Amino acid sequence: MRTMARPHAHTLCACVLMLATVLAGCSSDDGDRGDAGSSPKPAPTTAGPGADSASPAAAPDAAAKKAVLTTYGRMWEEQMKAYRKASDKGTDLARYASLDALGTFRLDLAHMKKAGTVVTGELGHTPAVSQLDLKAAQPTATVTDCLDLSRWETKRVKTGDVLPLPTAQPLRYQATATVQRWQGRWMVTDYTPHGDRTC
Image: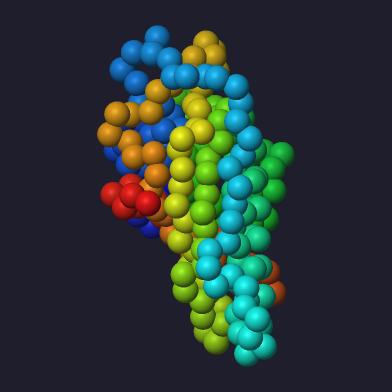
């Protein structure tokens, strides 16, 4: 889930730090299975410290942060719908993600479709607004998220096999998103995972 402006993982098993690798499955043995278990409930999405404030002077920032996190959370809801069928058709992903972010997610989906995989597990999140500029010509926020793969499952469509995560894949790592306000509506315009930053 990287931006179109930067090279994405072009081979499914080339970079274990990219979520695209996890989506496509990076296993040398098609018979390898993970622990399928029961389908877990989604991990709760929580706003980080500072999302709300009792100070009247901070009210505009607090409201903006809440709106940013709402957009970010809904984007992920639609993205997971797409990951479960390796397609964004029939989802509202384009309502919450645009530009580089949308192109990146669609590239992930293309990798999944080519590999014949879908997601059946859940991806945990702990997002917080780390930067906010409401005075810019294009109001912009940065969301810092901690992704949790502990409940993540990727399956092969044809066999139903659960693919194990690559051995070098950290279960928790950071990602950042740029969220901008266009015509009164917040949109995720850029998304970058940081597989080398565990959390």
